[in-house]
Length: 151
Image (cartoon, rainbow, N blue to C red; front, side, top):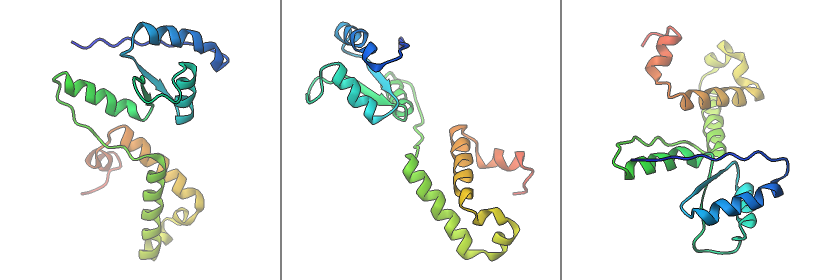
């Protein structure tokens, strides 16, 4: 059986979290902290007075680690999970930029039919939409059906 307890602390300054986080960590070493960024991870290690140590560090996940980490916990507990890969944002933008560049160089007809494809903001727009579709686990079939596309 899996028990998941979540504690959320509100604060105005990060320094206000130092004492409660230390108390929580000292009471239970098998915690997983979730922070938004690498900088926050370093700040947390500093608050816990663990910066520079290499052993017995707490598990600290960034938001992007949450999905794969929870899948791993479920798998170790005997649940079958399908791990889906997520591209990191820099890689995501490189892939989108490359695909748009390929379309622009290979199809003048498509460029004429969709003039926005040549605009600089198009990559950002289509990238955000693709990211949402991936996050919502939208299959190509469902997308085609929704857009009334013929296969």
